[in-house]
Length: 199
Ligand SMILES: [Cu+2]
Image (cartoon, rainbow, N blue to C red; front, side, top):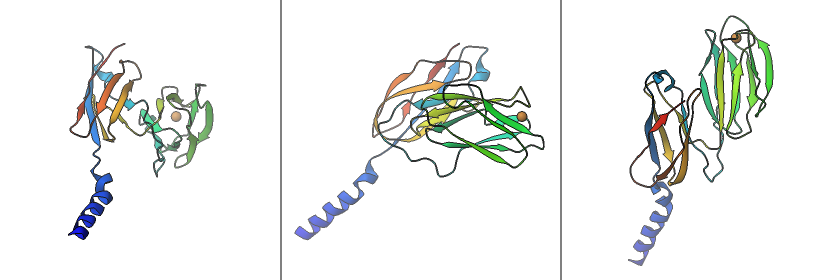
């Protein structure tokens, strides 16, 4: 009997970490009438989580295809190296004029080639431009932790596998702004948060 108790206790201890549930934060961003087109591509992110995070195994990619940067907005974990890829038959360039983090000019290169930049300053917004095509523009948003999401065309977002805690949830949008919100993620259920984006 005593042995059985011991075995049970051992099983509980071994599997306990697996029972610490992680939750989803979800919701949508809404805008004033006339600004609906900006709902898309809003970054929703937790400002700070007290932990260190592993970088993703694969570098995030910013593509240049059909004379556009794809994606238009790329949120990344701080320390990430972004691979810039040219998928067009024409030459493209990538440069960033903002001095906030990573003022750079990667030069001009042809199809299939990749050049890279490492982003190591938190909450920095890096504007990306191409000096061959002035209409091309995109953004890299550098974040402290991997708990971020980007809204779809309906303005919806999902941040998954968030550990329980109290957090400040913020948004970044190319044209609009919204107040940050204090949220609590506990062990049960989802957290629903909506944002009103304004000019
Ligand atoms: Cu270009």
